[in-house]
Image 1: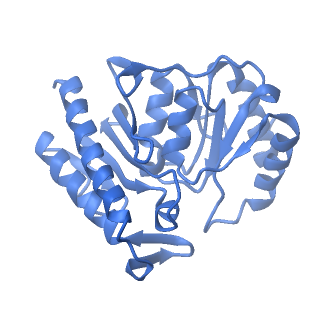
Image 2 (image 1 turned 90 degrees about the horizontal axis):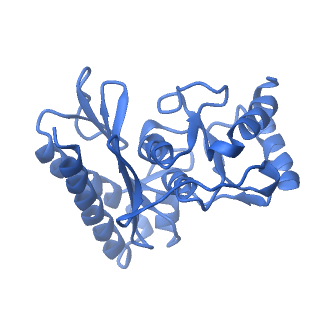
Length: 266
């Protein structure tokens, strides 16, 4: 399997779908929004982008399966699976805001081997493969060299349906407001992770996420020299619904803060 060629084709598919979505935004109307759940939206743009991606990626790897946000395709239980978010940041999109991104990961068994995040409005394409370090528009990227949380810019995402952990989450926000360079909430987890990989953020954390939100971005962070885990420090972040991603130097301190405040762990 030529992973570099497959990555090139995934990048092309992401750009094609993302640029179509951007062009479609000029004539987008709110009457074409569907509600999947509380404050969880989908539109014909999400569905059409996913169909475009599944078609292109399925042609690239005909025997591969799909784990896709809008449910297109089916999972291959023991082989190659694409994990696809056709429009990460749908709420931003429907309100005419940035960022929104296309996110594509490829897993072989339990291992991610490819990740692509295309942030559409800035036309920034982040990618990595198991054989290469992370790239942005063809140039190598790496996580930042900031060594303390107090000197870090931190990204997060707000829960929009699962409020069961909102009180400890508020505690993390208060702590980081007081003890970092600040908090940012962009509304696209895939973009947040890509920005950690490129050194714009030192750290990102969020709960209530799905595999398609994080699979590609988390892999890119790791290939850019960063660290990724769940809130307890484990490796269940793709399917476990919670994630911490940071540069190597602040990782232990940042994980300790999040674990202590979210779970009362040492």
